Length: 171
Ligand code: FES
Ligand code: FES
Image (cartoon, rainbow, N blue to C red; front, side):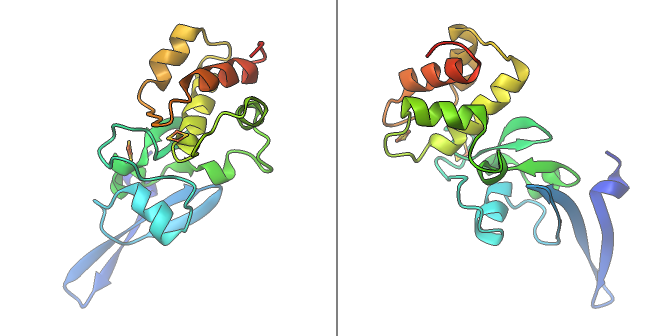
């Protein structure tokens, strides 16, 4: 992605300062952003776009609650600056599927994975990205990829079962 397609234009401000206007796509909608380029993508999603399915946990990239897809890969939105999201395709839990019927979401419902639910949108986004990379993951693949997503309720066994189910295997 070239610099010119990531950043739409420089806006002249009071004849002296310049504001960088960046473009990105969120859940299929083209957006422009001219705020602080250092602001975390998570704040943009939750506070400006009101996409509150993506959660704040640790804020430092260690819990996975804020996981979204950026150009198809799982990424922690709390440590992704807006300048790093410029020109990219961002997908949040709200748009993972049209009707909550992504295979991972269906498996989650069937296995009844969530307890309090707080970590679960991050878990689902991480699991969906895993299955894109590895359509039939082993237990080891699952544990490796999912280990960065913390669940205080300890739903790890059900998460693993649900990922196998979503992959077309037995729960
Ligand atoms: S809130 Fe982003 S990893 Fe914890
Ligand atoms: S379901 Fe409660 S933190 Fe994961």
